[in-house]
Image 1 (spheres, one colour):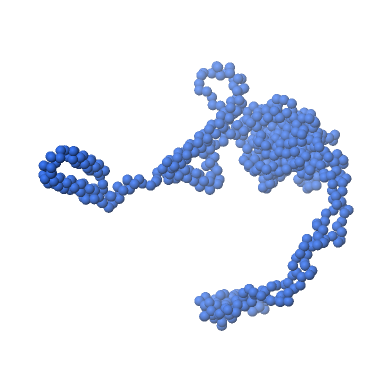
Image 2 (cartoon, rainbow, N blue to C red):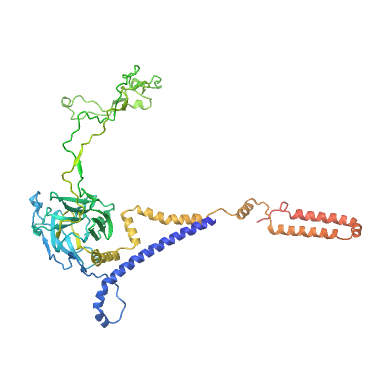
Length: 597
């Protein structure tokens, strides 16, 4: 019983803790949202102090999220929030893409600066890709070119797939600084230094980080791709929320890729790029060929093995079962299938063209009650003498030389670049995209060498957006109901989650073995057997004790008195003894009549 009570207490404590945790979490989220909201409107309140003093006192206004355009607060190379409502500083490409039909070769996809369709921050505008199934290209120059030296590179921007994404990209290109860079001629082949951002087609969810590495020997560029993230990226493409994408490149060749300020991929340029930065020091000699007598067979047939004389290669694998007996009632004369007697020749049947008409075959109804019809044949069984074609056993090849490989020679194209971070400087930011989805929202592009400045920019832009989206989200119960409407099987999970603790509590707290006393009492009522009375038994014990004390006191009396009274005492004693014995027998539970309840 004590164990059950402990289990009950543990279950109740667990339920209480879960409830408190949910309440605390909800409260913390509400506090975070409230803090972000208050920070956003503090400045607005200061400007309205004088006006509020003139107004009559009333209830305090309800706090609402008020958007304020982020402003860069430190060293940076590019910052764009689009809150001016124009494409000032951005250049639309007027070029055509090579190698495709003229109708779709133009970069004529539409761009607009506008708010999100379901914005939670009125006044917050961004760059929106408006067309689908078209080529889009737009770019803008940095304040000054970024040179890879001793400072890190931080690139970040926001993306929201407002209508989802079927097939298309939302990545950004950092255009290389070249003398012939013309933003109006920006196309897919325009040289870039880094390409970074999300891309999806079908069920392939990607987060690109590609940089073009210059071969120090040949001067040619080769694309290097970062390893695929281990994190599941599906949610970022399907939840229709604004997400912050950040790339951090450090002078020590390390890199980090973050989504919503959480690292989803990291590594080193020297070790985690494909193909590798540095080629191998040795390569296989292209002029080396395998000798004709090179033996790569690890096993060969034993040349000394001889087929046994009793080996019969012609023995069949199956033979008739000689012990089989035809079942009684087998109808040898009846065919297994007969022509359908109800079938009629089609009216348009032409025997000259179609041949002689025959009714379709159906199972013989007579055979349904018989063990079989038609000529009976013995069933086939495995031949115990079957051995198959004889082959010599395999033995180790004494001439085995291993698998041949061409010899290694020094790689004539070998080089060692220990500082791949020192990439080609870039001077512009560009979006060159093809998408089957429209209304892709871009916002708050930022390029800097100071991570603290980037985080402050993110807090003023994406942080406020996140707070507004969080404030507009439904509560936990509504989220659960919405999820169950999309996936009805979740109702079963909810019911089991609620019912299982209740069942356990009932089982452990409200059930158990009955006490012996209650069980015996119930049995007496069912059988109407004599029931001992605890109180009467105690009285019997007290009477016995008093009687024994009386006998002792009589023995202590004088001998004379004892002798004189011997006769009378014997009579009286016999009488008293008889009475006491009768009284004991009368009071005994065995001789007591049962009570009538």
